[in-house]
Image (cartoon, rainbow over the protein chains, first blue to last red):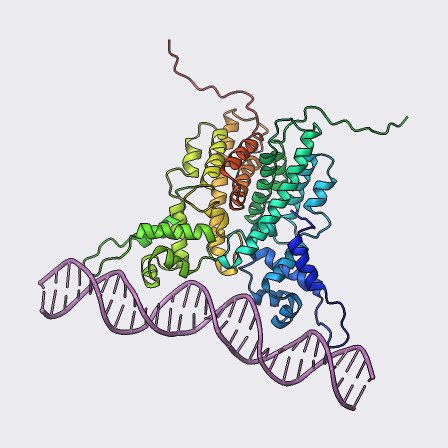
Length: 229
Length: 229
DNA sequence: CATATTTCATAGTGCTTGATATGAAATAGT
DNA sequence: ACTATTTCATATCAAGCACTATGAAATATG
């Protein structure tokens, strides 16, 4: 449930950060990245709309005017938070790209979700899955932004599956759309289960169950392997 | 994703409705059940906290004082809405109770979710799954109330699976906890996919994929069948 | 018709929200 | 030290929130 490239968010982030040329003036009394990380935890816990600026200022240790000077407004701050959330070392993109097979990609995504949703020093669940599922009309754009991120990840997994079918890792009649949808649904659902108190062990066992729905490989794709001796 | 019996909610509903003895006075200008149904649709779409009383009064066609006279406050109105949502003809309880096997129960729950989350005359997704996933501290009690409903359904499915194992419908080493968790996760996740625009067809195909993770019956439970001729 | 009772519509309550106006404080350059 | 520049803390802003006080309107009963 992590990814690096989202055009809108990354763009917004860069435009905000493009002010490295300070000549004089009072220095900032807070570390921008630290404050952003604190904000991420608050948003992660309460979602976008339910998080008030009071909570943000308390958690970040920054007064409202400084927040608005540094991040723009609440929406831009949240989008930067999402970009930070999606910029970790292990992302959905890196998992899918780094997986040898489509099956490994799905398994990697599920396991990463099970681990990440029950981390001991982070809020439970997925920030993308629970931040703006239900929101007022005023936050409809944020909602659709998160939805497009989810759809993009699903599309990437689906294309990995399609390539797997072409590589004969998977049966020719594989329903790539439903298969990718199932993995995404399990991930989204695990976020809710984690929020409801499910343990990491349970989510990992749940992952094994979910992977049993994976089609059996008819013919293992034979790659040229380096023979030794 | 529907159920009838939740002690707290049902109790709250009954206490509110216990005022059938009117002797005189101006009659109500609205139908209580109709207004409650309208409120359900609004909450279903925007969730608990993000739904304002302005939206409720507009949708229900009832002014604020009448709402408070009829339902108490926003929280009680929402709990009545949840009770209404959980009082349909086909509920999680009826599906599980009416299923011959644990497998049929899981399949029935998944199919009912796929259908119910993409109904043409209702908001997309599940009211329980998306109403209070992320909320402020003020709505923590509503959040945990919905979580307990979800856990109760999962527990019921799990016990059905355990009984299935004892009846030799399922292998002895079946992980009932993970199996029930998987079904619940897929249901919760389908709610998000439905909200993100997934079609009913896709969710139904997704259901078939999810059911492939179901353990294969080693020995079919033989019930005494009436032999004819 | 007169009275009691109940609900109605209007207008407002205090509170919180996201976002700022204002001037003091802290730096760099000269 | 003086000025320019930037950020700071304080105190607020208008708007929206859930909720309600008040009196008029509509019924049943006498």
